[in-house]
Length: 201
Length: 279
Image (cartoon, rainbow over all chains, first blue to last red):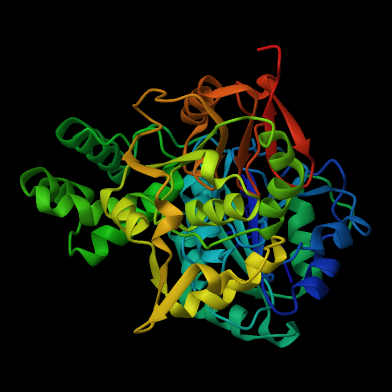
């Protein structure tokens, strides 16, 4: 399968957002390790995690990945080659000046962090230079956000429901977003590496 | 890089809307984190049946009764009693021993919203035997939220969480000692607020009003952009006594703040800072 968008032209992508819920660790553990440490893209991630305890996913992934992984801090400038996780119990948003904001607003789709909140704000900030990826998950958070990314001209890629531990989230995103394409994790990883500018897959 | 050739219409409208609220009502949201405020105003717009920010602007400019409703969208009111229990435990164990050395104390709960944090501190200070020498200032810009804070009545369903938090925060005795339950609501003991002044105060436009020993301002700064965060922390710096304490939210830090040098972190885990003695 080609990793290029439908028009077969490599787009100018400046940032990646990723959303996942149930099955997130398995999917991220296959998606991210091939990324080179000098990846040219920032990657912003919202994963549904319990509100009342520390999120151990960033530390776990850091043992397997070469890009820098951290929890997002409020008003932090977004840097390439860095992966930022939304902290538990906070929404993560992107400002137009490409800084990160945290928010304590009500949960969206019963979720805080919410994938929709991250994707919608990133779509505003990055427009057509954004790549959004929806992975495994058991609720419909992310579908509206994926649509917003697509409407702003960005690219949307979705883990194929058949390959996901939980298929509801990818299915909802594909339904909400006609331009989105279902892809295997291997193809998604290759896509990410291609846009990261350092093909190591 | 950015598609800045044409500013999107709704961005222009949003900016004009915030300008209009400021000039008509002196509520200044122009320095708030834009992504979050836009999200909340889109929600307000939808629920109030306005197709555009311009329509919403016209409505609020000519009908002042819409303003309180709008303020509930513009200000985020999400809190729990003893939220992040580790914060209150750290205050109890690390900060209270310092505060104990003062003959009288002032505590400023900045952005107190509906009062959960104020009552948590009032209970903490009572348990630690400091209440009788402490004056609390609870401030917010939202009059509706301040009224709720002053009433001190919360949905009874929330009390299970509050009780758990209180225990984790090293609470002495039971939280039920501090409220009476009736008709699905918990009414907090009104003596908890007898040493509190509730007041309208804006971190955006108002000045310092008292010298204080502890500022607790949690999950407020995240709604401000960087310059506004600098202003707010500048106010705290000016209000605090030498070696006074500043508590912020679990995910807030002074790392990107202009006044970062003025403060030392007391504990790395909890976000409690101490104003340095030499400034």
